[in-house]
Image (cartoon, rainbow, N blue to C red; front, side, top):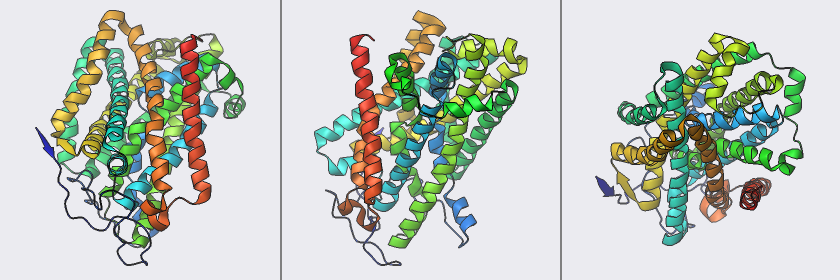
Length: 463
């Protein structure tokens, strides 16, 4: 069932003091000179051919979209709907800020994987003591469980809306998606990426249709992207804002991205890695721009349809579905549920990969993919089913928002190591973060940490 991974010979792994065209030296900033390839079954399986810019960007396109999936999952729907219906367009600025943070952090994650040949989990194991590594692994597993919880509930809600399947039954059905994931993994990484991109396009088309129906006022939308001080001063607004942050910048996505960029066959030279870093950043930036559109669209639709008509307490996906028909027409609610189902299923495709990367990287142990998926799904299905049975649809919706706040609480445990590693010249060579990027990255890390501490204090005070 489980095997311990033994180090295998790999090319020199770090970035940057060798002249262009020559292999880089073995890194000196890690406790182990070499790391076992991350996701060894798909490691360096995607060729990077051609000299033209367009052919190379096409070769590197893919990992960013797998990462972007996590930025538009059902957890985002819950927090965006709550924010838009209750506070109008005000929290659009939080979605924009969160997305900009995500672009920066995902860029650093891909850079770490390309330059060092280590995913973030492997880097943590090779840098920190064993007890610290175990604590970081537990924190990451909690984040993955919270994310999986959102996917389970979101998919179950979509099945309920479209086919009237009870939430509790839908939660159990979602556990069967392990078969889809395993089938796609055996057919090649490019097929998995293609399916993800197709589902993202489906979600995007659905929300473009919804926005056309809602016809939000452009001036109010643009003003919503300007930050407001009441976001911090109002505890209830901050709670939703931190939930949006947790739903947007997901900790397990940093681990995922640092691994899957290594599926590309870029040259193992300083020039090759530098070029790969640039194209990986372009890939993730374009993909996350689509995620920004979808997240903003959910909040805009909620604000234009619910907040302006006095329905300020629409925090549940089911309520949004029921209200869309009388407000926008029957087609709006069906398209809304279809987009939700596509979003939930899309998110499940990357859950297995993230869980596998984290377990292999931190513990140096690899479980069979089907066993890993069943464990992850079981952790999410059990609490979701209990809440759905005991408290019904309302309890499941509240659990969905809470899962996003839990995700946000885990962010710092991934962000600070990532920023520290990519800012260490011993680990990164000449591709280390420049001083301006170090300052910006640490500023983002402290903003995330500070918001989470403030929110915890508010919760404990009962505010």
